[in-house]
Length: 171
Image (cartoon, rainbow, N blue to C red):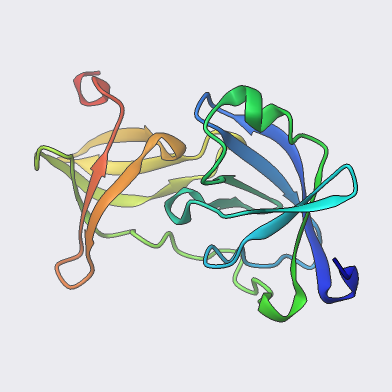
């Protein structure tokens, strides 16, 4: 593949969790990760396309945590550490708003059984372990963002249904 139309956007520097998450070190200028297009990971000189799970992307200043749709284990994710990530130059947008509001901030969250979890306050961008902050009637519920699966979103009602790790609300 001709690399003249590609831009290096990051390097994979760590795996995240046991379900195939990775952490990328972003290369300045910081580009927004476009989930509709695959990114290309340089593996032994070959550019291998990977699609990104759109509900798994969490920014933290100079890093981004995400999951590739085809990587499902820690072992597979760790094999990507040290590899560079490229994107088509024409599809890149510079992320000019470093303090961007979390997409679902202010939404009311429900679990997969339609139990009320609370109102999403934002993301605590802990490197390698971003946490979704949910206000549950004055009690703060911290949910590992990469463990969340978005089931349904109703933007008009500002309602989101998510699957969270079992037992988390019992703590």
